Image (tube, helix red, strand yellow):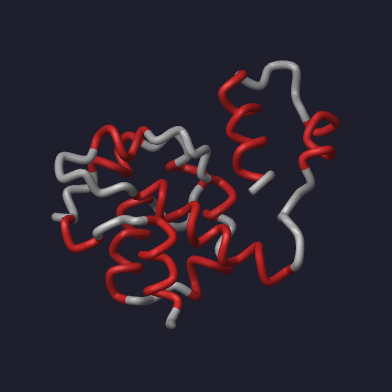
Length: 125
């Protein structure tokens, strides 16, 4: 099974529904921090171009807030694609990008509660 098939199966997303309107990227709070934006993840997965996404820091910049999912008029779920790609990048390493026990020491007192919850969800899979 190739990487594109793995991402599509893991995420359950139908990338063919994307009409490339960019609303997902417009809603993304991490847009300025990402090398690849949500609409680009969808487009690159559709083309089977997964390797650059796996190597990009953008997979770790996604807050998993699902703003992209809520804004999509066609029901495409870019955040689920990003999560699947993140898992494919992390699993071969034998461990997560960061351990859940390491997160409390990295927290900033000004950090929103949502970021803390998504960090635990993101890094404990």
